[in-house]
Length: 328
Image 1 (cartoon, rainbow, N blue to C red):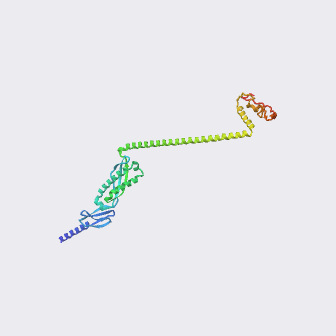
Image 2: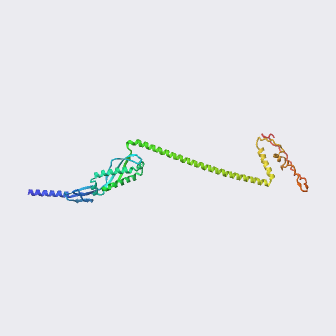
């Protein structure tokens, strides 16, 4: 009886061990590969209790969740020959467990491979940009380009790269001062260039304004000369018309203007003969007091003597008030 009980107990233990080795559980966040002598015979991606052959088969579990990779800080050279220490991270998912098992076997190896892909992509992509691009709003497209490059390299490994991000991009400690000096020199060069362009534009604007001013003044002067000439012509025409309408009155009027101009100024002294032509209207209101009579000849003989000029009533002389230039 004791031997039978021992055998039964041993059989129960063996059966229990076989059952335990035949059952396995796949969690909600897991996927499993059933291996037989190192070969994959089954892929389990649905959660639940599963069966396998005991002893000859074993199970390899992989995560369904997104996994993180934190590559080491990589120093890259930008297109403007500046150096940056770039700290980044990547997130990936095991999309094809069979291909993942055949290429990298485990997650540790996958993390190492993805870290290399990320650093290579950082050097290749950032080498086409300068520091301002990395620190500006263009950083988003740069990171997408890096992710696409890492995705292309990781896809043959059964890995789906979800995201790649740059945490920080700092100037190496040993080159901070040289970078500041270079930035200062570049800004000074740009400022000098902008000042030179401004001076050039200013000179162009001033020369254009001077040229336009000269043209406008010349045009205005030409127009003024034309208007003056037209005015002089109109004045001469008016004077000629007035002289032709009444020559005697016109001569009298011009003599009055000459008297006003010559005798109107204070302190004017004239030494002239009163019998001269200038004072002809002082001697005779008609201006003919000093003009000798002319005998006209006719074909039949001497013409009769001209009739005497009408008598002009004498105007009593008015006393002239004494002035500083005219003592009276």
